[in-house]
Figure 1 (cartoon, one colour):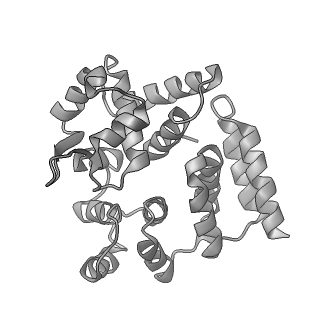
Figure 2 (cartoon, one colour; figure 1 turned 120 degrees about the vertical axis):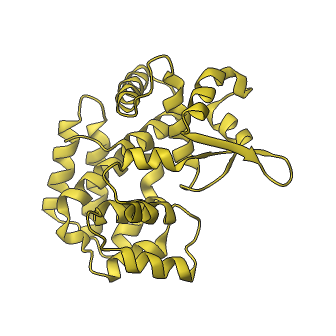
Length: 252
């Protein structure tokens, strides 16, 4: 099992925002190096992955985040503390910066990064991913979304998970209404619940899946355990066991 880059960024951000421990730091470094290599970021720019992961944690796909908030989440006094990494991301078009009307600087992740993460997408499929990263789809966007939803080559399961993670509930419901069945996607949902068990910020995702019809089955929990055991060198298997116990109680 290979973790997706998007999930690695989710886990890096969650780990980096919690208390330090040697095991946590070792895990962070290993995952960060994997992401760095996958995104072709040179070894000299280790902090660049941290910047991207925190942005994934605190913004929607098209969202503008005040630089002050990024500094606070990363524990920085000034952006100059990470100036070289920051400039590298800017020069390579991974991030953009600008100013609000009130002159407060903002930062956001660019479309280039999303295209690199989902590199096999058609342009229309990529537009769907960018759409669901917004705060709320308007009626025209929902019509476009629905008309393109079963576009050739689209990973409908990944789109559904992305909609939930980005809190685009209407888009996620539209996918379910058009025939996506979480209970037939045991491998996908087992993998996602394993990620959720490691990532404290994902609790709302678990609630959404269950409220919208995800059935807690032995097969699903077995997939979660298999994922946890395969990744036991890097992640806390006990956390997956704890989530499984919670899910078992819901099943009763």
